[in-house]
Amino acid sequence: MNNDDHSQEKWQTKLDDFLAQSSPSLDNKVVARTYEQDEPIGNQLDDLQTIEQALHIEEHLDEIGLQAVPEALQNKLSQITKSDHSSANDTIEHKDNVIKVNFNRKLSIVALAACVTMVGILNFNWSTPSFNNQQPSLAEINQAQQDLAIAFNYLSLAKTKSTSQLTQTINLKVHQPMMKSLLKPLTIFKES
Amino acid sequence: MNEKIFNVAIKDHQQRIYSLALYILRDKTEAEDITQDVFTRLWKTIEQVDMSKVQQWLSTVTRNACIDRLRKRKEFTQVEDDVQVTIAHQEPAGNFDHNQLSHWLKQAISSLKEPYSSLIFLCDVQQKSQDIAAQSLDLTTNQVKVYLHRARKELRGLLEEHIYE
Amino acid sequence: MKNFLLTLFILLSLSPAIQAKEISEERGYVSFDNLEADYGEPKVMINLNQSMLGFVSKLSASDPEVSELISKLKAVRVQIYSMNNDDKPALDLMTKVAKDIKNKNWMPIVTINEKKEKVRIFTKLTGEIMDGLVVMIINEENDKKEAVFINIIGEIDPEKINKVTDALQIDTGL
Image 1 (cartoon, rainbow over the protein chains, first blue to last red):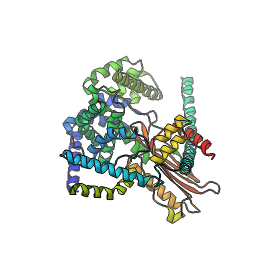
Image 2: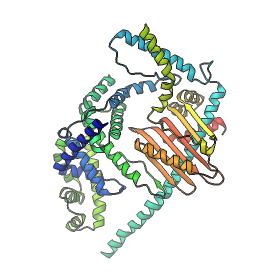
Image 3: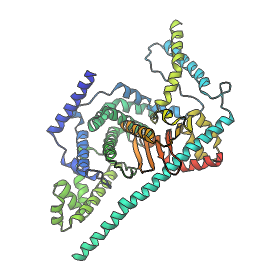
């Protein structure tokens, strides 16, 4: 824990030192302004400075130095292609319980594969609703369908409520002020 | 084949992308999340990405995702008691090589019609206030605000076109 | 041989835990505390796993689009409680979940805070794909006072929610 805190402070100190000694280039400042949002959120200046700093850090990343990637993240990244493959499979199958172990000997890998397969088969029997059959009964599936209908009913309800609130909010906070502001230039034009 | 290319991209760039996210967000959990998101996005669109420029692609997507995340942090902490509906955000785009930026920017700014070009030059390049820009260009401050907003949007459009051509 | 048997034994004993842990490791998974102590048994409790959803999607084969949508879901979890006159436990849970998932980078989509209705909707995005959805509703309109907690895990297309609802309602006669 202490080492973690210490190393965390180290990279932050390094970053802060770098940012204190240099500021975003003019080019980055100009580009940052093109990211201005259509609907300003909070402090616009804060937003601009954030973007400028992000561009600046990106440009000088090598100078600041790179941090080691945590092992957990490395594992997750290596799983990206694998999770894509398994989601394409038939939904009746369960995903293999993936257990990461580094083995050097082929025989150990074969033994592990045999274990995982056996575990997968045994799990399949435990997890299906009917222990005796491979598939759930029609009644069970119908019940599941009704359950899903209930769930989606509430989702639709929530969606309808938000749409109605969105319309009201747009009216109140966007449409009406916009109508007011549109009248202003006409007034100025008239005066000049 | 795609999988091999993708795995090489992870090996070559994960440290850089994670570091970039970490420095912008200053939060390890969020940085890990963004890194995973970015590489997942790369995997899903790998056929459309020019792998010779993948470092640039990854950096830009990461930077934009982090900026979005920072904005979301601020939006969420500003929730008030009355009704608030968050409209789905627009992804900022833009992918450029910092080395060529200066040259390209000058050209792009010059290509904007007036008064957009002058406004970008006065307010963003020369960092003059909007009042001074208004006086220089014989506009009202309101007009400067509106035109400047449009000018920046147009410049950003040019930036996107330039990157994806 | 001894090592093989030992490994097998360990894996078998761990397997239910591994299986149980699986859905909770999904990016779109969110845990809801049990409110039975405050409200009694939930009036609706739904836990559909990917296997069952697969079967349901086959029942909707007459509409391929709906069938495909359902087949992309990994889990559907719903808890609905009748609140009686005390909305505090439900409100506390809503606040707690909102705070927890905000820290895990879920994106807030909708926040409604009206006197008789509170709604929170969050999504988890991977790139441009929504692979997690949380909907929390506290409704005190009319005589119906209920707290609804929904977690959908898997690829969700919010544009098509109404279409799926309509199709399911026709199929089930609800």
